[in-house]
Length: 222
Image (cartoon, rainbow, N blue to C red):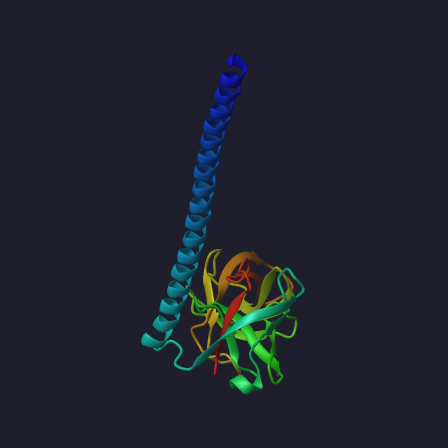
């Protein structure tokens, strides 16, 4: 009789223990599930916020009439991976892209121009490319020179007089005198000035604003 009572008591204790273990496990799983759901929602909200911010910035381009007709393209490849001379985008002839369309960032930082157009993608030569030669103007002195690519991570600005008052930190913009680039596009800032006694001109190195830009998306002016 006593053994039977003990067995029933043990059985009841096992039932209670099993119940509490299951309850604790359910709470833990429910909590983990909720935490995961909250994290996923936060990620989704962050993506929505970033997308809305991007769309507002693009809308501002039109409202300010900086660029009236443009396309947004994703960057699908760059070459080389650091200070790319060539950039490939997922927009082409079917999207209305043409050779020599200007390419820049949402901040109006000049990236380069379209060199080759295929049906569904295009190749852009960036300002780092050695083919690049752009007429520019210095913000402080209003002097006009030419920036050339092929000197990554910088650009070389030529034809600024030896006695120029240009200084480190001066901003450099497109002058509007180039064949493809209209005026006012931001290129970079002066970071080094060297004088050569055998030349009438300075050697000026410009750090492009796209120096550390993450090439994921660009804007093409049509």
